Amino acid sequence: MSNQDPCDQIKAFLTENGYELYDLRQGHACGLPCTPFVKVKAEYSPVDGISFLAVFPTRVVRYALPCPYNHNDWQNHGSQDYSTPEELQATLNKMIHPPAGCWGATA
Image 1 (cartoon, rainbow, N blue to C red):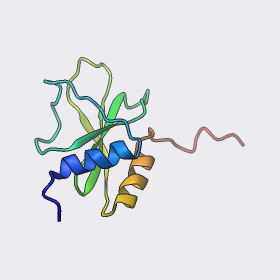
Image 2 (cartoon, one colour; image 1 turned 90 degrees about the horizontal axis):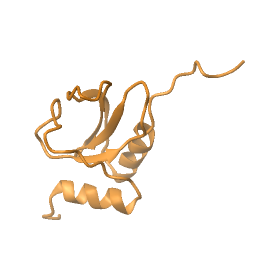
Image 3 (cartoon, one colour; image 1 turned 30 degrees about the vertical axis):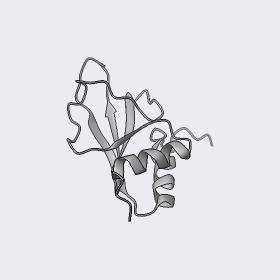
Image 4 (cartoon, helix red, strand yellow; image 1 turned 90 degrees about the vertical axis):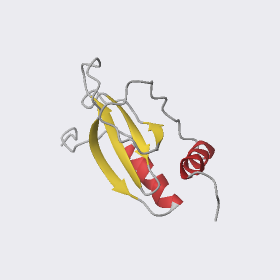
């Protein structure tokens, strides 16, 4: 068992696998938990606004900052648990894209 901090282990795993980490500016954390987590950059969504994925040791949470951007409260837009590195990658690959519905399909 490693004595390394779980966030450091997660960060190393994510960077090794090509995920882009998100740099959260100081003072811009209203609505986010106080516990440590790793931030992964998510795709921009015109509906959700700016978003990122918070990776905790057993859960991934999607946070979004809706327009107008001078409003500083991050909102939880969903979460999913994982228990293996493979499940973490599958969860990130699913949650990194903005939600999409079926209404854009043509008949």
